Image (cartoon, rainbow, N blue to C red; front, side):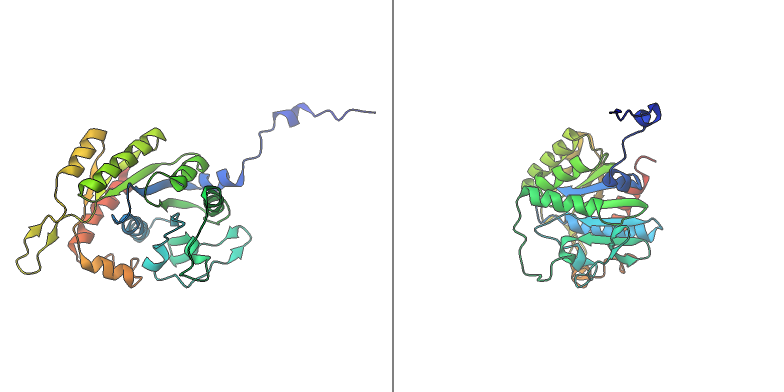
Length: 277
């Protein structure tokens, strides 16, 4: 009986690339937005980074990887949308001509139902978001991670062949700064370049005298940045109007408003846009 012998050409063929690798190689910049603890405005930074770079003409995707507390669809007013499935996979929800979004919140019918999943289920969901969503060719894919250094950040780091950068968000509080140092160490351990730290909820303007008030203190973010040799790329003030914009689902529509917050945030966008150029 003749043996099935492979030809030399067959032996030299490269193994077929996985769909996940092909998907990620079509994306120029894959950037994590992370924080050491919750409540520091990480999703606000991720949402506005995606929206403002889309405003500048880049093709942008935004993946809400917070399985248990997804908030991105609410910020863009698409929480009632449901993605369709096309030939290339799940079609992310288009928000503008240049921006599309995917989140577990877009797949759950009851908004009040909690996602009660262990680590392996969360990793499988994140893999599907990266592999089965038809992101297409993008200039940027921003990944809004849940706080901390647990399953979701590890899953992203393991699944994506090469992460191009991380933006770390914190507030001036000492408690937040203790956690942000862990996030910076986490990024360095995974060899993910840190684009910089964004200090959110800094000084606020008194509505009566216009004086700046440092509600959460000051100075700690600069020390953490110096200790880890990274830059502070933005110092964002507290502004109730930003919360209103998010609650109304208008993040992608309000970026040209003449607010101090947006003027400061443009520095964050510049830093991300110019990173590695």
